Amino acid sequence: MKLVVISNPEIVLDESIIINNLFKLGLKYFHIRKPNHNATQISKLIQEIHPQYYDYISLHQHHQLAKEFGIQRLHYTEQARVESNIQKWQAQIDAGYSLSTSIHSLTLLSTFTLFDYVFYGPVFNSRSKPDYKSSVPADFKLDKDYPKPEVLALGGVDASGLKKLKAMNFDGAAVLGAIWNEPDKAIANFKQLKENLPILYAK
Image (cartoon, rainbow, N blue to C red; front, side, top):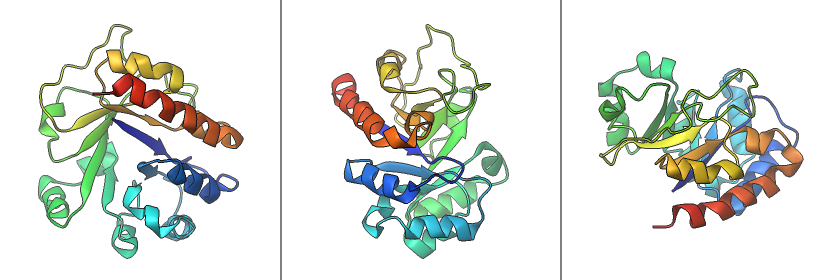
């Protein structure tokens, strides 16, 4: 099962050190999402990450940097997806990229088969955005009988919520606040998340 860590949208003290340590602990999916950063700022952050981990990075903005750094994962925000098209996605897949996106409605989920996975939420009340409240009922259960895209829960996810996500039939989780609300505890919190995944999602 997938555990995705999304970057803090703002600058964090010792951010690249924390990111590299998360990779050392086994993180396989790291999304760089900094909507207010220009390409130069994103490039600087990537340069501070050990190149051996570039395969685990997905870019939310400035997709042109992917070729420069050999990054093979691209994420589309809802707005970027609307402004793009199937032909472009297929061309990127043919060029070796894997794609993900964000959605707030499951109605058209079956049409997103070109994407490897999608973020859906907020499932719980957000930890990083106090006004970002859960949009799913307590008895929610994902009804999905096709392999792609996988659906990852977003919003308010921490170690204590992972068991609920399993019951909801999600394919994994994306976390932001659980890591970055207290950067000095980022490593400890990631370890706790990771330790819970094999037990809850073992196949």
